[in-house]
Structures are given as C-alpha cells and as structure tokens.
Amino acid sequence: MYSKNARGASERKSNTHNKLGNLRYSYKRHIKEKLIEMLLLLAAFFSVLITFAIIYMLVKESIVFFQQVSVWEFLTSTQWTPLFDDAHYGILPLVSGTVVSSAVALLVALPLGTIIAIYLSEFASFTVREIAKPFLELLGGIPTIVYGYFALLFVTPLLQMIFPNLPGFSLLSAGLVMGIMIIPYVSSMTEDAMRSVPMHLREGSYAMGATRLQTAIKVVMPAAFSGIAAAYILGISRAVGETMVVAIAAGMQPNLTWNPMEQAATITAYIVQVSLGDLPHGSIGYQTIFAAGLTLLLITLIFNILGHLLRKRYREMY
Amino acid sequence: MNDAKKLERLRVIIARHKRWDLIFLIAGILALMIALLTFMALFIQMVIDGAPRLSWEFFTSFPSRRAESAGILSAWVGTTLVMLVTAVSAVPLGIAAGVYLEEYAPKNFFTELIEINVTNLAGVPSIIYGLLALGLFVYQLGLGQSILAAGLTLALLILPIVIVATREAIRSIPIAIREGSYALGATKWETVADHLLPYSAPGILTGVIIGLARAIGETAPIITIGALTFIAFLPASPIKSEFPFISFEWLSAPFTVMPIQMFNWVSRPEEEFQFNAAAAGLILVVMTLTMNALAIYLRYRMRQKIKW
Image 1 (cartoon, chains in turn orange, green):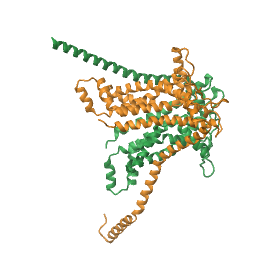
Image 2 (spheres, chains in turn blue, purple):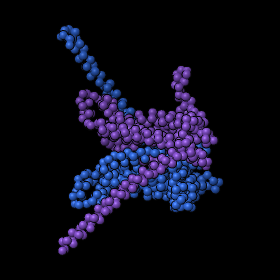
Image 3 (cartoon, chains in turn purple, green):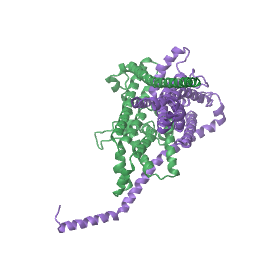
Image 4 (cartoon, chains in turn brown, cyan):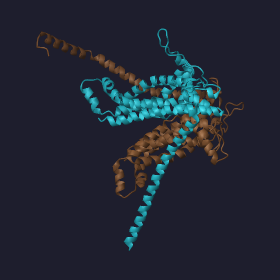
C-alpha cells in the first residue's frame, strides 16, 4: 500500500521490535496459562470436595447418633419411633418400605424399559425412533412431585376399584408410578448400549437365518451386557433414592411389612417427614435423618460401585 | 419323503419364530403405549382438575388459607430467584470442571478419581444433597433457610449434569480444530476460549437447560433444608432506587418454590386444595416440558447443522 519509503521501513522495524517484545514477555503468557489451568483444576476438584462434604456431614451427625443408640439396635430393632416418648431406633421398617416400593417399581420399569429398548433399537423404523426417543426423554423430565400427585389422586383410586381394601396410601401405587417414572432412564440407556453394538454382529446373525427377536436376545443383548447392566443399576438407585412419590403416595407411617398393599414409610419419606416438622438442630431427632441418609447413601453407593465394576469389566468385549 | 418331512418341520420352526417376532413387535408397541398413555392420563387429570384454577389472580396472589383465593405469586418469584442463584453458581463451575477434565487433565490416578466421582455424584439421591445442605449451608455456614442456601443446594445437584454435557460437547469437536489453533501459535487457554467453548456452546447450553429443568422440579432437597411452606410476602427487590441500585438482600430471604407450594397443597385434606395443586403441577410440567423440548430441539438442530 505504502511506497517503500523511510516511514515504511521504520514501521517494519517497530513491528519487528514489538514482536520480539511479545516473545520476550511470553513468560507472562505462560504464567497466565498456568493460573487458568490451576483455576480449572480447582473447579474439577470441587466435585471431589462435594463428595467429601456429603460423607463428612452424614458421618459426623451419625456418630453423635450412634453414641446414643447402639448400632445393634439400629440394625435389628423392628420399630422406628424416634419421635415418640417410647423411642425405638430400628431402621428395618424404613428399609422394608424402601425395598418393597423399589421392588414394585423395578418390576414395572425393568421389563417395560427393556422391551421398549429392544423395540426401538431392533424393530422400530427410523421415524418411530426419532419421535419416541425425545418423547421418552420428556417423560423423564417431569418433576417427581407431579408423579406423586398422580399416584395419590389418580392411580390409587384406580387401584382401589380393583382392590377395594387398598388403603389411601400404599406402597403398590407409589411403586407402580415410580416404575413408570423410571422407564425412560432404563430404556434410553439400554437402547444406547444396544445401538452401540456393531452392525456386523447383527448381520452375521441374520445371515444364519435368525429372526429379529433371536438376534436381539441372543446376539445384541449379550454384546451390550455391560451397558444394560449399568442401565438397570441406575434404575435401581433411582428407585431407592426416590423421595416425593413415596412421601406423597405411600404414607409416612413406618411399618415393617413386605406387603405392597399396605402403607409404609421409606427412608426418604422419613427424612421428608422430619424436615417438615420443626426439630431443633442438634436433637436426636435431627441426627436420625442423617443416620437414615447415611444408610441410603451406602445402599446407593453399593449399587453405583457395582455398576462401575460391571461397566469396566465388560466394556467392549466384542 | 424324508426330505419333504424335514422341509415341513423347518417351515413350522420358521413360522413359529416369525410368530414370536410378531408377538414381540406388538409387545414393544404396547410397552411404548403404556408409557404414552400414562403420560396422557397424568396430563389430562391435571388439566381437568387444574385448568379452572388458572387465572391471572392465581399468578398474582399469595398462598392463603382459603383455597379459592390462594395463588402462586411467592412460589414463582421464589423459583425464579433460586434458579438464578443455581445457574450463576453451577454453570461457570461446571463448564470449568468439564474443560479441565476434557482438555487439561493428564491421564493419571487423580483424574480418574475425579471422573469416577462425577459419575457417582450423578447417582447420589437428591435428598442426600438436601442433608448436606442442611448441615453445611443452613447450620455450619449459617445461611439459614434462605434463597442462597436453596440455590447453592440445587447447584450442587446439577453440577454433574453440566460437567458431563460440557465434556461431551467438547469431545465432539474434531482434533483438527485444536491443531489448527496451536499451529497458529495459540496457547491452550486461547484455543479453549476462542475455539472450543464457542463451538461447544450449543451442546453446553443443552446440558444447562436440562439441568435447570431438573432443578426447577426438585422438591426433596428444598424440603430437607427446612424451607417454609407458607410464605405470604416477597423477598426484597434486587433493584433499589438509591445508590448502588442493586441489593443482595433477597439472597438471605425466606422463600417458597413451585414444587414446595404444590407439595403443601397436595398434602392438605381439603379437596379444593387439590385443584390448586393440579394447577401448580400443570404450570410446573409445562415449564419443565418447555425447557426439555428446547434442549432436545437444540440438540436436533446441532446434529443437522454441524458437519465437521
């Protein structure tokens, strides 16, 4: 643009000078980079801190609790009445409520979720899949409190028409609705696992004359085992940790029972019940919810670790 | 003769397998229908019960002891403010953690620890976060049952969602983009800030929306921190007429949110309150469905538009 005159030359010279200057000061850039990396590392490390904070909080309050109540009583007593004058601290009734409601939920969610996943992955046309998948995702996004309302005011009256002596609160209706609620999680993860199985395995099976169902059950599902197992375990830990549906529809009365037609409180429902009241900080009632929470965390942790091991062990076996 | 018999048997076997195939196909469609019909029943039940309560007054009234004059003003204001706190704290933290794990983290024990930890956090029941918040935010840090405590609680809850979404979005950017940037002398952070983050923005946004949609509907952790259910006032306005015009007083205000308000109404014995619960539930469902639909649409468009 400019003619080659003195000005151009001097400009060029100063440009070079500036560049060198930049290079010379590049350690500033280096420090900035390191600083940013440290900040990002801190952010990532923060998630570890959350875990430690959770464990610390639950254990700290639980220790105080277990100084007053023996672990033996906690694990074996069949009554959970911490807020009564005649207080008993046996977690079993809460565990039984949790197990029964989760079992009902899983009896609904695992078979239906698996069937839907096989259907979407192996049978359905492209269009059906493209419509059904987002729809199921939407279903999974509905707040659990809404499902609780639905269980109490729609499913329970409906079930009472079939079983006239079903009480107004029952593990059955809470479990059924929870099952429907968990279907999307199970089906979408299972389907993802099945679709990631390489096509040539299916083609081999079809070439041998297998039908779609045979291929799905005998070839695709075993190959996708780790993913399917992870999906089931996610479903289980969701059912165990689910709170609002059971708190609303299964009642809040601790009840040592294995009968889904009865009402019973789960671990989560008990925590909600206590939180709704006005327990003073530091009282034994306040500590019971942390002991209950610790029990819940341990149960879900066992399932999470199991899922992790399964995923690791069976990843990409094909 | 023997051959004809064998052929006949083969045909029977094939017919039987085909029949099972068909039976399963029908079972699959039925299973899908059960999920669909349940959703329809849920939605229709709520519309029938709740729609008559939906009026302008419902949005502009405080909760009340009389069902027909009760509204959700304090609930939706509370939800908005809590979500604001949640988004402001979880989004930067989650993105930073995601960027670190995807772009910076060396392959070692420590990184694997963080990764396992994030996966595990996503599986921790939400009520456990509530207990953590009760002990840590409410009592240890003395935040009380405030908007700040609730917002931070939900932020912890959705942090794994934001981290995972960020990682997936960044991972899908081809390595050539990074190489191009490095070849021009960009540093790692310049590559991240000028290329990777802008290109992964839609993916991250999708994750953030899904996370916030989840946070809006979360009830259990908010109940656990002991949030009041009867709030007939609004927190202090964030905007002031005198200098410095912004006030953070609202952060420490007691509050109620939509799901809590709904829970409060559901657990009352009077039938009129159930109609209020249905109306609140309807609004809640429409809100979360809209957000989730937006996220799904964003992802769909991304898949259509971006071809590396």
